[in-house]
View (cartoon, rainbow, N blue to C red):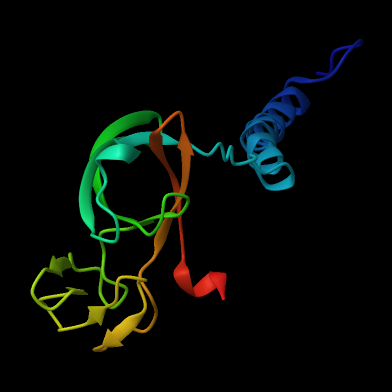
Length: 165
């Protein structure tokens, strides 16, 4: 027996059986489509960190400077202690090297007697200008961007030494 007005029970159940999964699929695929069609834009704001007083840096002698830098990891902002090897080449030029060797990322140090940077793991050696003297390191030491503001050394983001030419 069919009802006179409206749809029958069988048609209603079929509409629910096929309609609900289609509605759920659309609800799940909509965020994915928005993510794929409109990717999030990475916010790249360069952070400059106060690292040292320029007057305290010796001329043409590397100084290991410790400073704190903020790093974003997902939703967390972490304050990390890091170092840089800073060389005051002249009163106008200050170079800050990242603390990792360009071979395998080991920590290197300044050898006062030999007057060059040396990586103890694989014996790569770097001059005061960061260029490779010996060893398996494929490129010069990476540098931080630097600038001087009111007699203070500010250290910015790191740049690949190989990308500079």
